[in-house]
Image (cartoon, rainbow, N blue to C red; front, side, top):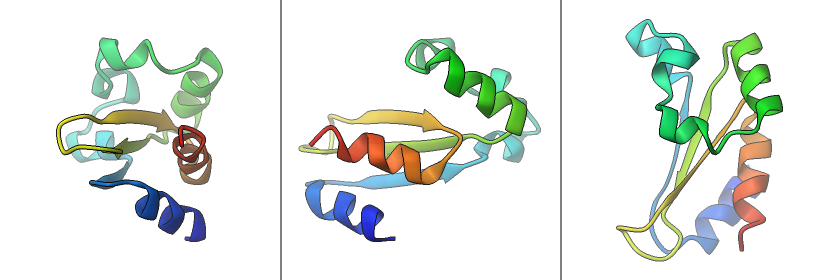
Length: 87
């Protein structure tokens, strides 16, 4: 929780975390994630997400409410670490 709190404090706007949203629609990860977003996920992370059937989606608005980035991963803490590394 400390890392998440640190990210929230560094971010001027919103932070949202969605975990396994694909399951809400009875979709696989491959069906759920748009091809344009898939391009930003390494093959290693993608393979692990599919194997574990686990999708963490971290969306961060670092400076304004209109500019954001999205991190996909299979591990919440690692996704937060990646976001923090951008500061």
